[in-house]
Structures are given as structure tokens and as C-alpha cells.
Image 1 (cartoon, rainbow, N blue to C red):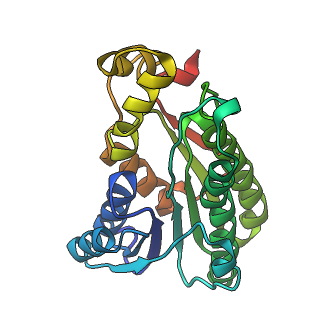
Image 2: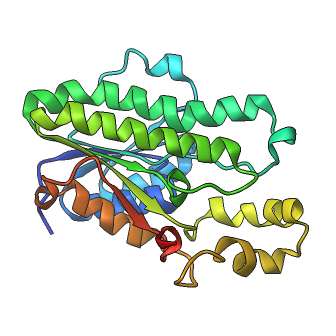
Image 3: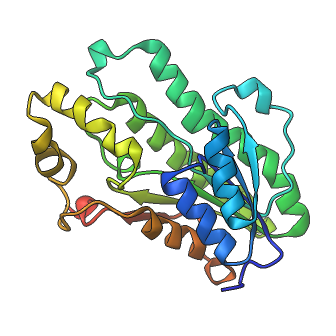
Length: 248
């Protein structure tokens, strides 16, 4: 495909998982992609494989982003982390750090990218949310809060950006086959007091009609379409990719 030829894109958390899949999809459609991640070797590896650029950046440092100006046509806010604990045991510093990374950083990046998008009367903001942006699960207070907030930010961006040719949408996958999900298994087993081998069937896939993990490339394909000219009238939406979880 070449429907994004001549466009520039920036993908956060692009060193692996969903972010790397998004970077590859956008590059495959012709975009020049900047891969942003705190993992410098990982970002360089992905960028090198797609002819893009790596940018090592700690997105949790909001003050460092306040004066940023981005010359990009497509922004994919993907960077995220997870922590599984009951509210009464949830460290306040972890809660604050997760919201800084998954809410404040997307706001600051959108703020930095919109002037360029407005000038060119074209822009695509794609926010990697989650089924947890629409539903809640116990023991994930920071993650669920952050993803619900990201949904609101995305809709406001859609309303403000619409007159300028800028769309903003969320992609809401269920559990994706990534290291972020793999690392949860031990935490889920601990908080639910079940063996690790039962976590996949009894916790992660319990609410899904399709009993498998989402593949990163499936998320990337949807992001690629949302960034394309074909999706010019799609904005302010949340696209579930959760195997039917949210259908209940």
C-alpha cells in the first residue's frame, strides 16, 4: 500500500508489541515513521527495520514535553504500563506515574502536534486505549482510570480538530499478545489467589467470546486504516477489538 506516502508518523512505545506493529504498518503504507521509546536499543532496532528514525524519550517527564512542537501528520499514542494491586495496596506514586504516562503525555503530544496538522488541514490522532477504557476490572485502578481519561481526551481532540481536517479515535483491544500482558500473569495469579496456568482462561479470556489473545499485527492493521484517507469521516470513535468482551 502507498496511501500514506509523503506522510510523517510518530508512534510512542514503538520498541515492541503493539507500538512496533503500528510502526511497521504505517511504514508499509508509505509513511516515514519516528519510533519513540525509553528503550533506546529496541527503538533503534524497529526504526532500522522500517527505514524510520528512533527517538529515545521518557514520556513520564511531562515538563520536558511542555514546549515540544511536532511536525507530524499521524500521531499514535501507544506507550503504557500496567500494575495490578487492590486499591488499598496501590502505591500512590505508581498511580501518579501511570496517569502521567498514559494521560498527560498523550495530551502534551497532541498539543504539540495539532498546530502542524491544522496548518496542513490533515491529521490523524490514534490513541491506543483498551477494553478497559470502556469497562473496568478489579485491581487495575490506575490503568482503568487512565484509559477512561484517554477516551475523553480523544473525543475532545476530535471535536476541536474536525474543522481542521484532523481526526481522533481510540482503538480498544482486549488482551494482546505482548510482554505487557505476559508480565501480568504472575500479578493476576497473586491477586486472585489462583495458579498462573489458570490466569489465561479464568481471568484474561473469561469475558471474551473469541478465546484467544489479540495479535499486535491486528491492532496495527486497524491503526493503519484509521490513519488512511479512507477514514476521513471516522472521528470521535472507539473501535473495540476485544473478541466480544464489550458486547455483554
